[in-house]
Amino acid sequence: MRRRAGWQIVLGIALAASLWASNDPLEVPPAVEQVFEQVHQGRYEEALAALEDFEPDFPETPLPALIAAEAYWGLIYCETGSITGEHVWYVAEQKTSRWDARFFAAVETALEASQGMREMPATAARGAFYAGLARGVRARLYALRGQTLKSASDGKQLRADLREAVEENSELAADAYLGLGAYNYYADALSPLLKVIRFFLGIPGGNREEGLEQLRIASEQARLVAVEAKFELARIYGIREPRPAESLRLFQELSERYPENALYALSAAYQAERAGNRNRAAAYAQEALEGAQAMEGDCRERIGKAAREALARLR
Image (cartoon, rainbow, N blue to C red):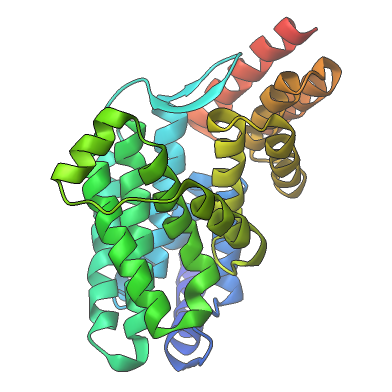
């Protein structure tokens, strides 16, 4: 208990010093980066355990709640997402999860903290930026579950928040392009029926090519969300475009950097297969099987099972 309290004090000081005193709009304390890296490695519950002590004591900073929301998103996807021996799709096999209440609470906490920042001129741009990120992670869950109207509503506000952030501080542009690029792409790539719904709801249109370019810039230049941008771009290239060779390259980069997150290696396996290289696909599936052993709960069980099925099929 004493050790956890020490972590809380050190990280709290780092958060306060960096997020409020720095002139750099996205300077993140090393301790916070460590926790975010745990999320990228797929160690979601470990990251949440590190966050739970200090998050309530710093309601004025959205980052802890945003990282928690990302971790809960990973747990929800492992529990309910469509992960099989043939594909990794962003479709929910069930519309609820045991993590839902904590996910939505983390998003609300981030939005409340962001609003506080927006009321002060020195932090207004960052507040708008973090609000956009919070709405983005919630819109992603709604989209996963096919809740189009809720996803579109959050997407509309996400767009407004991030545009405001960039207008007030252009240094936020590369990171804001994660949300703006995803919005631009999906708003333009919607089915005709959904475009009609979007029109009647007063939701702005998008631009597919501009969205792809914004996501590319975010994947290469963003300081906080480059990993998320690279994953989103890889997923779009592999599933919606389709551009399997480019998708494979991005998933390969992610799996090499984060070998413990077996979702990246499994996604690379499927894109290698689509690109016509079954041997390479089998090698990635083997990496996914090994990586899954380091993950927790549903992630270990479901990704491991899918990797075993993929290996049996590919060999």
